Length: 281
Length: 108
Image 1 (cartoon, one colour):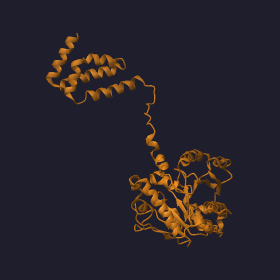
Image 2 (image 1 turned 180 degrees about the vertical axis):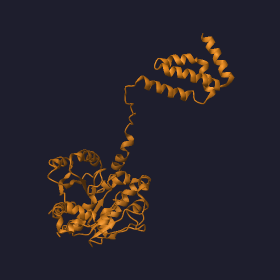
Image 3 (image 1 turned 120 degrees about the vertical axis):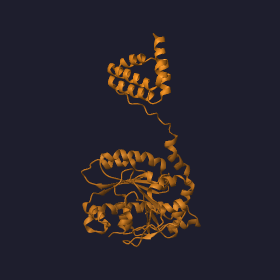
Image 4 (image 1 turned 60 degrees about the vertical axis):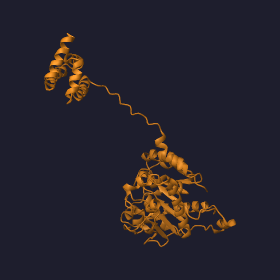
């Protein structure tokens, strides 16, 4: 399997002993209100293709924490996670993937999803923002260069934490499906995104489950890109079947369509991460 | 880079700042029966269980006044209300009926 390495940025970061460049780059995956677009599948498979220490922040608790499931990580009630950390400042677990040793997973937390939005509204925005930046610093200290954030489809599940996480992401990937019906979702999401994303952020659009039959759609997707690109991840029944079985599809040679698309996507995102760290290939 | 949290605060409170648009009733063509049913609903609500209120209202207007107004929309409903009101008045006790008769006489 192809592994994609990140150009190390130590030289740039050591300049003057003080740098404002990030040591860990946050890459968020969102889809608007539409679930099942394949965010978690892309996140889990992408992490396994990167030859760098990667952390996955799995917030897919509106579904079945697919990203963790694909890395064969199961959570118990004792696993305090990201939500506990943001809400109470308690420690969060960093669990090792059973599939890839370089991948670590941050569980969503022990709190029940229905209580989360109310809880998040009760915490000052500054406190949450501080904890997010502290977490990124902590990951950097542990040598994790990339943080892949798998956000839930429904933004209301996280209350104000959702826009905050998007704002703190350096690269935002909007995962959508082909078909004109998704155009309106994408255009609404874009209106919201331009208000939320950081001025230096990159926004990519990933059209997952793409097939030639859906002619014309990617051209429209171009409108919703900010400094990024539109990526097509091909519709691959073998990859879908393997995902449903709880397997990382990129590890199987039958899924060459999916693997090829994901390789291109991963390579580009790793390049964007490198650029963010101040390195140009 | 210093993050501007107020930007997110604005996004979160955006919906609260927007002036809430009053929900406009959808104009629908209403038949006379619809109007009559609505009248009946309002009517039974006003003349429901409060004996004192019934007596007070019928001090000001007569049963016939009400029935003439309702009859403009639906004559069968007016007939029903006439009977219903007489019955309702009898439940208000001796005072209600007597008082009402006096009002009716003064109208005549």
